[in-house]
Amino acid sequence: MSTTSSSSSSSSTGATPLRQRASWQALREHHARIGERHLRDLFSEDPDRGERLVAEGAGLYLDYSKNRVSEETVGLLVALAEESGLRERTAAMFRGDRINVSENRSVLHVALRMPKGESLVVDGVDVVAEVHGVLDRMSAFAERIRSGEWRGHTGKPMRNVVNIGIGGSDLGPVMAYEALRHYSRRDMRFRFVSNVDSTDFAEATRELAAEETLFIVSSKTFTTLETMTNAQTAREWALAALGDESAIARHFVAVSTNAQEVSKFGIDTENMFGFWDWVGGRYSMDSAIGLSTMLAVGPGAFREMLAGFHEMDVHFRTAPLERNLPALMGLLAVWYGDFFGAQTAGVMPYSQYLKRFPAYLQQLTMESNGKHVTLDGRHADYQTGAVYWGEPGTNGQHSFYQLIHQGTKLIPLDLIGFGKTLNPIRDHHDLLMSNVFAQAEALAFGKTEQQVRAEGTPEAIVPHRVFEGNRPTNVILAEQLTPHALGALVALYEHSVFTQGVVWAIDSFDQWGVELGKVLAKRIIPELESATEPDLQHDTSTNALIRRYRRMR
Ligand code: G6Q
Image 1 (cartoon, rainbow, N blue to C red):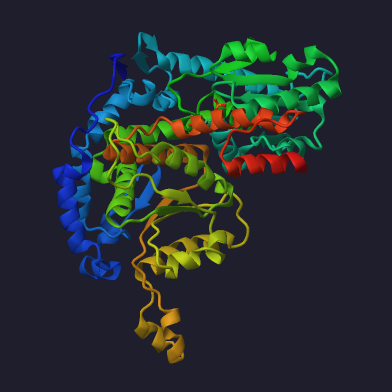
Image 2: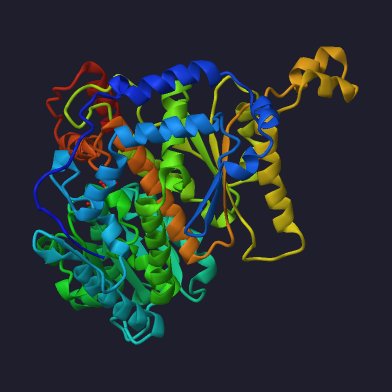
């Protein structure tokens, strides 16, 4: 593929307000007819739906038949996507148009995983060639660290890698490290420090020897308070042990877009891996922000992960919407959020390796679609992004699934499972996967009063043991948790988020709410630290809290 972008502005912003779109009205009428129908009836009227309401792409299988939809619903949702301009907006993103309107930026995480040889020219620059330039430098560096050729200040190879970053510069790297631990170097230790709470740094470095420790300071801006504070602490920690400024160059590398700040910090820009303003923090785990992942699993596995991302990108761009995994998942999220009033969505990976996947997705989904202002500056008069949360199965089943089965709230779930385990021990994996299928079945079909009575349940207890069912799930299956599958899975959610944002006509790629937090605390720090009583000008609550803290500290 070779595309050339017009460097200017965005394409259609879905000019017709959402609730006035014809497809939206049609969905409202349709919802009035189908909204209360039970999955039991939908299945008994259409027994084959479990084989038809499925889609496959990039090695992932999606069964969405246990959703409160019929084929007609899917057709109407696809019509909504079309009327909302999903196709045009997707093309605009892949072309490098500035679809992040509030920051006037292109959104090109898809370029991070385009294969060598493809080209995408944005503002006269072939971004794919640049991406591969950085990937090659990362690979060469990773080989030097992994082979032991790179030596620390005292001549020892690096055995510990500590990534310092927060938000998008932390959650992806942690999630990917945990997810791909099976493929990682077991003779090296990987740690992640994000919180400005000193406990995070102290515990992460507690038993590490500085002479064998490499810090990766990961920060797009290189100005984030938490990261810069932790980086300075790391610098002091390393200097205290190694004693000499020249050690910094051997023990610190940076991942950033800000070369000036990196060199001010004392890191040689030779040891800086760059990325670009068109990569949003939460979309950056496959950029140089993934350096810790590459150090853990090696450049080959990292590139396999990129291939998985890319395969899902191609699927999203080319598959018909009714068979398009990210589009379907995004549209189902709109269906539940806007028509059923579902406030939250659960993501339950039945894989211990994916234990940080829900936390990663929380940022991806909520920072992207937690917006109430539309692209043309109006207040959205409909629901946007849901609250995402989750835990690995089966653990969640023994805690909060109770509320999902028998509570008063509708919570659509994604259940993620794998055909083969990476740790075959006895029949653990069959036990694990039986729970995926059983939960989806129980949530959909429940247990009726008659069934409960037939079990001989005392009459007074019967209502307590009834399961209403009609709780929707998506089941996502992949053969095995490989780097490729992880890439495809992450890209699936990225594009599902994009699909939702297009329908809602919001900017899924800015994060002004995060920017505010970056500014606010800075005003209060001197008030906490000043030796003399500060003249506090906040509200009475904030003033009193600050005074109490000053007495306690
Ligand atoms: C991500 C957000 C945010 C960001 C962090 C870290 O999309 O913008 O989570 O990643 O605030 O920012 P830096 O990488 O600039 O330190």
